[in-house]
Length: 116
Image (cartoon, rainbow, N blue to C red; front, side):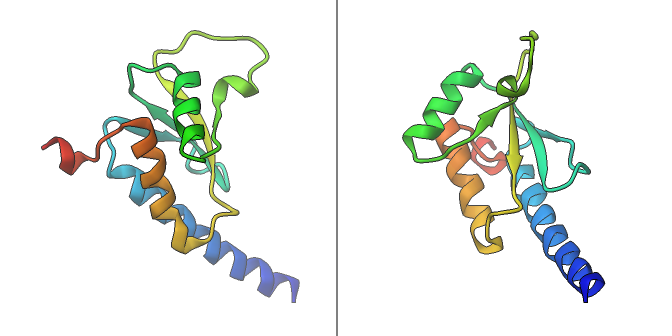
């Protein structure tokens, strides 16, 4: 029973993973993804004039909680991109696309089609 459960969950999380990647790809090159093979989370790198903390606050104003990579570091390092840890395991599949679009709207990042 346990192996059946694991196989079922793998399929569910793979489907979510693929949806997250597909949706964030609409914002490339303003948003780049790394760590997509790390499990139920990934890193997004946002090209923005705003600092990480400013983007966190913009998202918070829209009711979106997101953690910048800086909050997980012992020592501050200089980066030229705002980087965020995005977990998708707990988000229902049907809400993934809408949630990502809401986050990108809060960050004021246009989709590729909006910039053409």
